[in-house]
Image 1 (cartoon, helix red, strand yellow):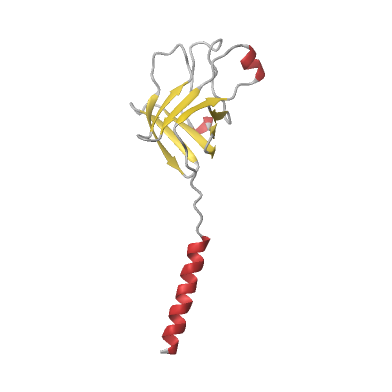
Image 2: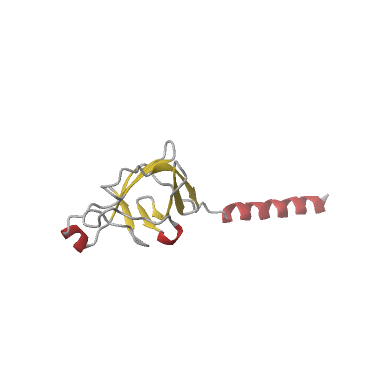
Length: 135
């Protein structure tokens, strides 16, 4: 009987240590507009910054980066760890962001669809590592 009590106590201690060791590393994002930080030169050139709008209620997004385009870059997103993957409704394009914290994303250009704009005099193409801050 004593062996069973020792075994159960040991097992309980191991399970408690395992439970304490788990940490929730997922980052919670919130709905809102996340605007790309522009360089001083881009600000002086009065360029329009790209914005990704997140709606956590239905996991949808709107990514606005070209003011002259008639294509609406809308769809749904998913979060895997600290990565947000936004895929357009027609599944032609996807955009990947590293979630730095609940107010900050970093654009991952190599993992995203290529972004082109009609005229760079008005719009800015997000480069790898571009920071998007919640407004």
